[in-house]
Length: 269
Ligand SMILES: [Zn+2]
Image (cartoon, rainbow, N blue to C red; front, side, top):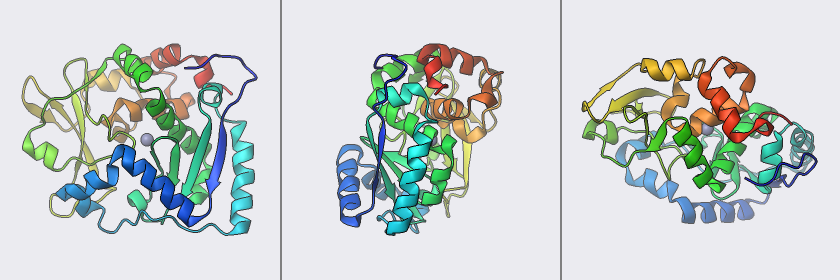
């Protein structure tokens, strides 16, 4: 994950304001992760996204200048680890309905905002940057997740869980993980007939028993104290949540272990 020289910074932001450039960036991302294709091929995921428009939205010149200035200031507040390990990041402005309005990332270095005013949140920007980092250094992260008790799970979910599982662009290349050989978190649409992007339950499947529970298993709740339920869906989400708002998780044993593994520069700038 790069070296740890304190003054070094390789990170920069490029706001893509031309729609045709943004369309090219999305096409390149799609050729790598096939995310839109996978959503379209799945009944629940395409239904949930039927009102989502993922096309680029225009950026007026005055907006562009204001957001670029905002990003210049934010750069100083980004943890050192990210500033050293990442280089140019493309920022895209999508239509407000894209991905249910949620900021998200696409490969290899793209952060998509359905609402550019969300750029004002430093923690959201840091959260998304960790997703870019997790893709770029996926093998290193695999080792970190292993130390934290997580391994990718390549088994098959029971039909009912797989059929209503909500896809996530930040985890589409490795969606299912098992915690300490027992629990596989699965984000499941609340409604079978009218799945909605923002209406998802977190269920925890145990392959050995062949059943699932609908509340957080105690061993997870203890290690990941303070974590919102939605974050449990994938160790990429868990770690992005914790590293982007570190002061919330000082009492979590997993957070302290994580900072040891990724280094203190992951939470300081
Ligand atoms: Zn995320």
